[in-house]
Length: 162
Image (cartoon, rainbow, N blue to C red; front, side, top):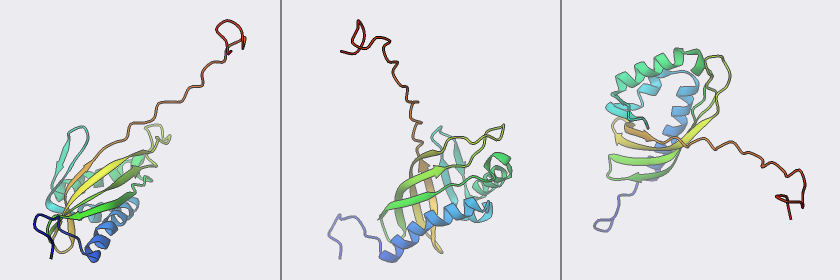
């Protein structure tokens, strides 16, 4: 038995099932399967985007993914989701942390956009399986372009290298 006030432990089966959600998410995205992707959320589950926008409910999430996958810019996109830290708060509630990427998105002129990535936290609730109640993510800022400093015209001279 767990010690009083100790965090709940996930069973190995629960941990495997939750980690597998990341692979299922990526597969459904890669296949443009908005119905299966949306079915990963509970009826009242949501996504809170870094800009504060909220998608509430599995139905709206499904519709929004259907519209997204219909856009040329996202048709060949890939969205890996790797869940690495799993913690069960109770037998039916878990938190999963990990990383995500979004690559293969095109701009309006069909040129590839840089890969986006960040961290993700999911709150999951056991139903017939584990369903997403809350999906929160961050976007890692793009690294500034590396600039090579201009070499002095006269190394060793005034303002030059010693």
